Image (tube, rainbow, N blue to C red):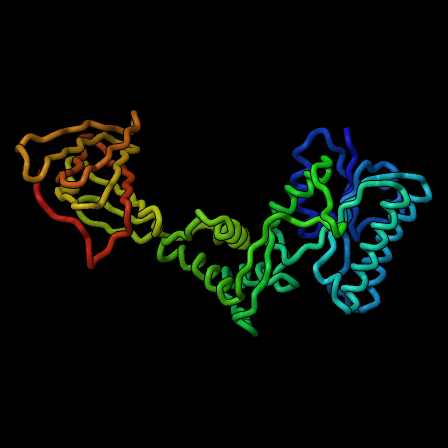
Length: 372
């Protein structure tokens, strides 16, 4: 059983780290934050086998708090370890701003130097990460993260302000940070030649591109067009955006086309994967009786029973029938050049999921009506 201390445990990175560490039953997790008493810190340091030092100050009311909250707190931790001859491994989150000549940057650089001095003196492992802009779930909006601010404001239909749309930012995703931190805990990370540790992957994007992407996520709940999730950055950013939805805004309505046969609704559209739609068909009703030159479809009956029929265009007049039902899920591929239909052969409504390999285009529908 290893005891791990996390300072800044209720902050953005701290919450994500603690939620992952809690999954390991071989870890005893100690959390320290601004609500703790100073005495708690020394008590935790006495027990800790590894320290994730994430606490710090980045937007104080008084600039002096930069020094006390970054350099001061770090030196307090290290002084206790030295005085008690502890060689505890420590990981600290710093910032790319540590190279800047401003109060925040100076305070982070001083904290870094203190860590390096401790590691050399005590012959302890030290991991100092200079992080760029971090994004992911649980980050406070309208504070110091443009991603969190854009995700929150756009998901709440609030305005966003852009001063320089062409400004480029460098982003790292919270899950990749946490994964790397845990590797460091297991001694699977080595500092680079400059003494620092870095997250292997980051993403560069302009402010305007970021805003456009997040707005497209909001619009997807109306136009149903999903982002291209083959790209990891889009997947990470989309997950982040969804995390900022209000509790009463998880759901959104679908437009349903209702007629005497039942109803049909589009569900998801994708430029890469086509679209999915769902229908309810009344007993005895037939849908379809059309064919396609190139469009590929799949049918899946999930409730009720049906007969799916095919006839090859220009070929013999024989009809191919498949009896399917929701009791035994079977996917039917709809070949091009075959007119096809689906008939509800049961006594209750038929529920069917359809997939097409392209988004329906009114200008080029590739759909030709002909009775099976």
